Length: 111
Image 1 (tube, rainbow, N blue to C red):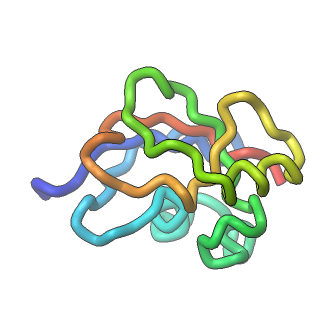
Image 2: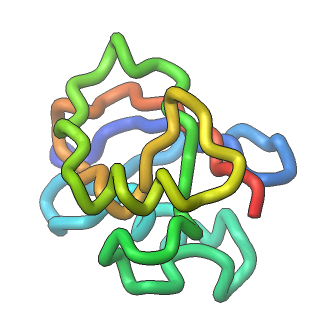
């Protein structure tokens, strides 16, 4: 579709998936991961996308090439409490699927 963008998601097994993500459905990257069933049911988005659990933590592998929304206080606070956090960690539930993230490449963090 014309509203779809390509993003690459590396799952927790290390398998890379280049997928089409719709920009016209007001989805987050976490919801796309769930829709494509790239992780077992119940292991991502446990809080429903409210930045309250960090189950959707991911590592942004190409931050300089995409225009991500700035991290908000809630996301920073949740990452401060999470495990396996790196400098490029973000919560996938806080990354809206929009044209500006075309080409985004992320790796889902281990649980």
